[in-house]
Length: 354
Image 1 (cartoon, rainbow, N blue to C red):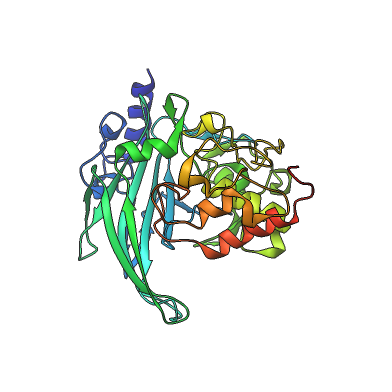
Image 2 (image 1 turned 30 degrees about the vertical axis):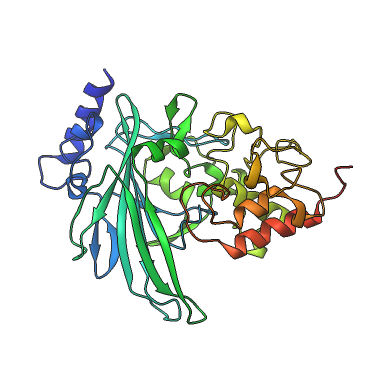
């Protein structure tokens, strides 16, 4: 029944014209071999751009991915809508397709650096559940072919100081995608939560709040008419959006909570880093680690109030050693500003573990 409804919606959306978002609709059972079959995005003048009918969006506080720039899009078949929820990921119907493109700037000293796009990931709500895969862009930046096996793609650029930086950027394989997107025995999107989407975005017609825009575009039902009534995650590196505590918690949600939650891949650790988590112990405060050996740095607790130098959390965030670093996948270099923010949060925590 779900598939029949979806095919009917897709047929109406396509109208018999070529290259309509969603392609021929068979991705609901088997993902396409080439990115262009989805008719979602293409590269034009060095930029990834969404096709007509596809909505670009952004997040308040995203995952750090070796300093990659990202372009996110979502598309729903005509007549289908996502359902608003104030907590957790919005409820997206069968047929929804997300894309997330990753690229690297050549020289951060430039006002407009040239971007080399490495991959575009597709995450689709199939009839059997959510499924995702990466598509690798060719050297000409013209086509992207399926890359189920993933692999390391070294990237080098010049940073703001003129120094050369090299990252061993990881394109995830199917199993690695599941690590981050698992929720119990199923998979789910990570970023599109109301609190992460509640922000202004620059559309062709002008700036608009994303929740309001999605509602007016007919792809989101049930959102508050006034976005100020919806939850909003601080921007981790913008002091005007929240306190250091709030912004550090937002950073931990964006970078860690997809695994560190009660149903995620790291659920057995007891370290749950969702932004709405209220238990100090679940946040790691005076909590002995599940990890042993070098991953602990010889420290006794995940978080020691007032003492980041003896806390396991910032120690692992600042490491690039495979047996130590957190997150375990998704980065090969350290995010020094993010690590410092977490250290500042810990330094300001009251109390002690004695």
